[in-house]
Amino acid sequence: MMLYTSEHWVQDDWDNFKSTIEVLLKSSEATVNFIKKDGSERTMRCTLNSDLLPLPKVDESQLAVRAERKKSDTALVVYDLDVQGWRSFTINSVKYVKA
Image 1: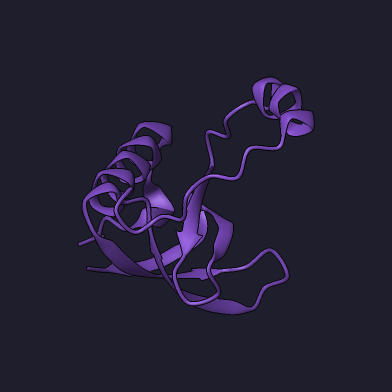
Image 2 (image 1 turned 120 degrees about the vertical axis):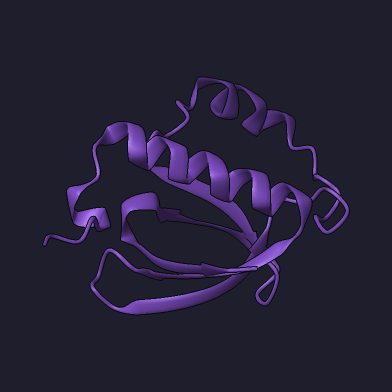
């Protein structure tokens, strides 16, 4: 008997997982454990809940740069509540999410 793990996920599975995490983070905060690009493990308390986010700082020189950025299909940008800054992680590096 073979267990179905994320090692066997196809792109649709990763897309659904990313969407699920986004929905969760927009309504609350969560702890996400993942493997960083350098191979180290990180646990981050994060959110996308607008009630918990800082007010945006408007820097007009950056508006054009932000408009040109392509949204990543594989990474999720979140607000780290402990360091109070924006961070990102790759969806397929997530080990667990705890809400």
